[in-house]
Amino acid sequence: MVSFTGPIAQLLDELGRLPGIGPKSAQRLAFYLLERPRGEVERLASALVEARERVRRCAICCDWTDQEVCPICQDPRRDPSLICVVEHPKDVRALEKTGQFRGRYHVLHGALSPLDDVGPEDLTLVQLRKRLEEGGVQELIVATDPDMEGEATAFELVRLARPFGIKVTRLARGLPEGADLDYADDSTLRLALEGRREL
Amino acid sequence: MVSFTGPIAQLLDELGRLPGIGPKSAQRLAFYLLERPRGEVERLASALVEARERVRRCAICCDWTDQEVCPICQDPRRDPSLICVVEHPKDVRALEKTGQFRGRYHVLHGALSPLDDVGPEDLTLVQLRKRLEEGGVQELIVATDPDMEGEATAFELVRLARPFGIKVTRLARGLPEGADLDYADDSTLRLALEGRREL
Image 1: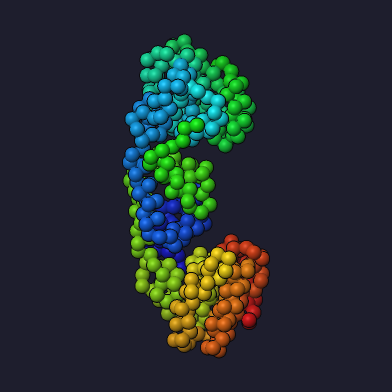
Image 2: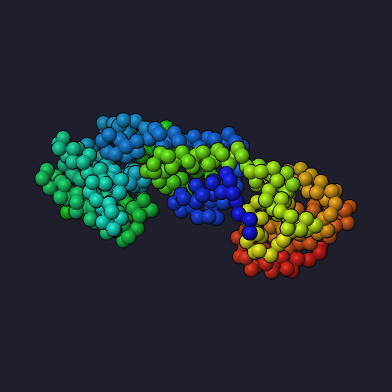
């Protein structure tokens, strides 16, 4: 059994670290890329570096953006009194696809998880509190995942919002238990938005 | 619906071009990488460029290598009179895993496919002919995929070898019809090697 060394081994190793990419997929991707024109591989490499360098968190909602403030936070047609709080940037995409939500977002970049050592200070709660302090927010829609971490995070958000007298609602549990929010289909998400209940 | 622009869109686009990576996987990978340390992303990017720059085809068997001649072709313990001809570099890995083959390889980098406009000139047949001309080869084991393209390629190899009076064998059809060679389990591959038949 001859295994690879040098740059092929390196590439297989790096690809194999990506989530959902096992050794077989890493090999498939590596061998695919070795057959492609050099310019194409360089374009992928620089897209990776560029994105990592230029993309940052929106100064307001913490979603990914290459500007100081993301397009949704800049959009005057989006209702600033309604903030939908999600765990991850991908959840913003899933909710936007329903076309039903005209408020703004707040991206926590995670959920509370004592087992994984994720505490309140690891989420973007400081930025959220700042938005609440600035006033004008009437409702927080908690759209964290319907699992243990998401529930724990929801209660942390209730605690955060209480001093401001802001209504806190939670997406209806039309979502299947334990699932990833961004894998729900559009109409489940739409029903969940409509059936949100006060905490 | 707000979709991405700038470097995020670019990255999603580049990742989405990879085989087996749909829009959802591309997003998952992109968002994962945005959360990783910059150095880690740069390491992946340079592994891609490095591999594409330094990896080339072995001067003898056309398998991927970062040297002039690959380790198998350099290995004096590997029987040079026995050449196993495969479509892709991944097939070499699959066969090596059986631990049953002590000859050498020849990687065609494809299979004949008139529909996909792949003719004999697109495969590494010139290099294979050169190896046969140099003498010492007693048997070609044809290990192309057990599908239409693989069969067509097998017959092209018979035609190529005939003037040299070299025995040409084909892996036994223990392999499931229409499957990819490198997804077969080790013992199926081992049986197929043992049961090879002359063409």
